[in-house]
Length: 204
Image (tube, rainbow, N blue to C red; front, side, top):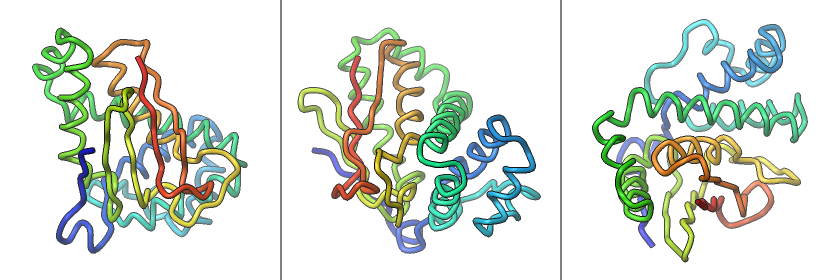
């Protein structure tokens, strides 16, 4: 199993990239409209992000509060759909801005098992941008399993169903672009349901 941890200030302060806020804002606007989106951000104490979208690393506690508030206001099922759309949008952003086009072209012509190993290793190197103070790891057993211990999405969250559809959709969008549309990523275990970590299974 390969393990990646955030180090230094990023881990100590629990900082992650802003997509978990900005893409959730966009998804909420599309699903619920601007007025309800504003109420949700106000309830979470994060209205400032609607006036000035974050462009730098943000506290993971802000992300946890937003996702908790979305669940509280919309219910688990609707919150999962909004989170899934936010995850897809995040995947689109990563493909457009963070994964060079020549790398994408190269991965698409490689055998899928090899491309998957290269891609997940790259994700692990940048795991600090989404795992914050948590820990990201992965293994092929035999299918690819992605694990986030201390996920900032479900920090302090308690649900009846897996709550990290945001991460599942992000992984599915990125892996699907590289390996083909048959890729599916599902959350098999979730800390919000009492599991030790959030585990995602990728199949193709």
